Image (cartoon, rainbow, N blue to C red):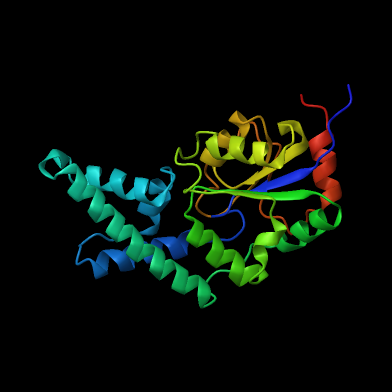
Length: 242
């Protein structure tokens, strides 16, 4: 049986394109301080909280953990407070990225360039907010970063977060390709489950926050993309599925 040729790469952002998670964690902690809250998220706690996709969802999840009698607070008031914390956190994160606190992971830019040169399409499938994506890629690629990507799915376009496949299904539709001609690049179990549910073969690059995750079903699990080229991706993608 002939295998579909690889036509597109779909990248997750946080943890995949760049090691952003510790910068996100610091930004949350700074926002808590600015709000006069006594919350402080350390590495162990934040690693656990990353099982919840989406910053606002993460805040709400933690709020319910520390305030089990949540009904005491009006839902709208809680919503407003979560939004306020998240807005502060996003501003702190954006400043950090703009000041050079984050760079792309090894091999990412080289692989993107190689894929574009070979006529492949690129897309982004993330649960993070559009302003975070823009800050990171503007800093890493330049002000015209957007022209490299056929489509971008983020928290504003795909409100149902990973592990739900919504964002990947949207990107496959936007690329106008069948799922078997696309390859997802992810770093987490939630991301792998999201991409797999959308019918995508998935290559994982692990990091300190996700190395312990279950990556059953991934096409490959790698430390990063520094040793990977497009030819290898094509070979893995076209190999018979066992």
